[in-house]
Image 1: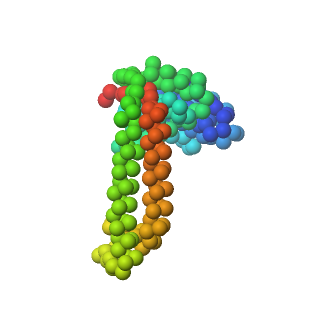
Image 2: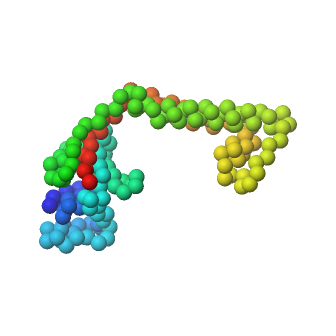
Image 3: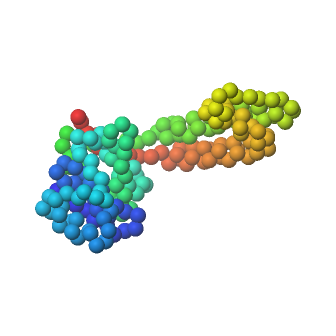
Amino acid sequence: MKIWRSDQQGDDKIIAYVNSTVYRGNPSSEEIENVLNNFQIEILPTKNFTGIPLHYIKQINMEEGQTYIEVLFGKGSSEHLRIRDEEKRKAIFAYFKTHIPNSTFYIDKYSKTRAGKKPLIAMCVVVGLFLWTFYIAAGMENGDEYRVTGDHYNSVAGIVVALASLGTKWISVIFGTLFGIAAFSFIRKVRNPKTVNRIQLRT
């Protein structure tokens, strides 16, 4: 059993590892002492807490520069254990690394190519949609008519036609902004590829 408490704003007030389960919770200030005492005698909380048994957990990650520890479980589900204090965050992760059985620890250092892959794909998608939408918008401004069968907003084509109706000027502004956001993300991630400490649980 191990329990961590934090009074720092933005943190989870209590993080605990009890009976092969990871808990995070935010009881009221009046309840904290009672909750801590109950943990000591293994009376587990039933409200304002999330408990994740080890057999559900697939991976526990601590990314350098982030203010949380990520617990992955289920089908793409995750919980964030929020700890702003770096030393405390590292201590919690180190405890998990040492005390969680049937697990493997490794450091995952991203290359620049891997770090920039997702924002680069986003940039390509934005450019593709821009060219398609701009083409239709220019046609509309020249008197062409476009119709989409079925529910107007239930397809990519429908959304493109709806955006195109705004005109080429607004299309340029909207997609220029989206491209700028994706480009900024690409530059930031390529310049500072992330490093993630991972605990992989073996099932």
